[in-house]
Length: 497
Image 1 (cartoon, rainbow, N blue to C red):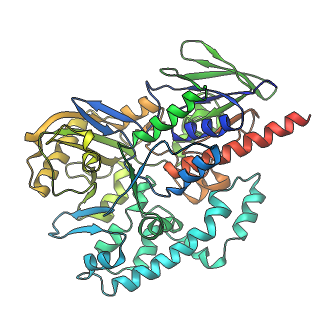
Image 2 (tube, one colour):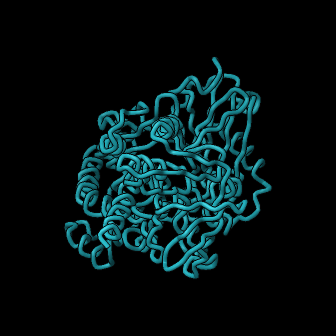
Image 3 (spheres, rainbow, N blue to C red):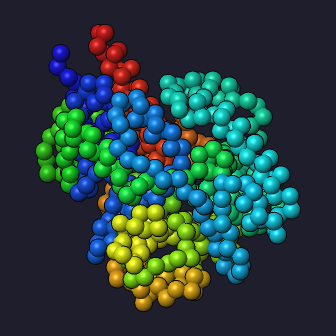
């Protein structure tokens, strides 16, 4: 029997996981990628003898990779490193640096001076968010929905006790659990992992605190995050998957509600039985399929996640006082968080995250030296189209980091790269530079998120951040499972005709 062919557009984790599942089921797969190497945002920058994780620097829910590996019959092609401590938080003007541990005894010691009865409050918070996680992970997150009625039916199965969380923000939920501003700030940082702020992230996502502190913690990968991509790439090449890089799909040819072939930027055609899009599920519908519902004005009205301003520094010397993950916040959290993504705050003293990948992976820097990755959550190109000031913002961050840590960072720099939201948008077709796709408002999750099976062209499917279930590395793995389920269901239907 002739194998059916699938073309996957995009080689992010969602695309690679989909290819792995499909090849396990006997499909022939080709992968087409705009960038010069596989991985999408899960990529690697190598420069001046230093290595940097280009985007994601950690992940949770590691067991989703267990499911992927087991269901596709492969040996683990990479090795996890569990992070301990999870991260540190430095608040401007506060002499105390908070270290966040999974161990509740050690964590309680960090907050003993500012939050009375911290342990009891955190245990209560984790029981509540843990119950929410366990009551929704299979019913909602790992679930395809065939209709609005189907989605509504699944929601009715979620215990009513979680209902109030639908009508609160993450910040409001934390204010009900903790008294101190510092505790509220620190345990609301998970909202930024979704590319939003705790003031506009639904309280249901407080369950991420459970995932972080109780359930699975945070993980990195031995040899660096790009080992995930390289490991999957090697397995796929062994299975006969062909990869085509520096190739952007810009148009399609259709007949009778079916994609006949795709067309790349050089006019070459790509033909298969099925197509899986690992580009943004919303902007692809607008830019390539030219859907009125996803026109630029319509896309602009949707809520998108933060845009990344990223800085990659190769340093001559070690930063012994920094952990793997470090957050540097100001003392105007409410004002800053509410205004940053709309370009309503000054970037003279921005908030930022610092990752030191050479802490866990010494091969990322020459001996005696350090690799440093800095992420500054920023407005996308709708709100800040001009990033000609990116070098100055980067220098503001470097100066602030130097002041807070006591290192003269500028004098240590041997390698420096600054990528603005404009760069990110151009590299990976991220809409207006939005780093993590569509945001996770109640009207942009579940059934209300762009579907993973195209509404018109029935041989086209989607995988990744802007379709279900949402953004993040474990969500991309889950997304691949849901997408393959949809493709298999459709394939069976047409095979019976």
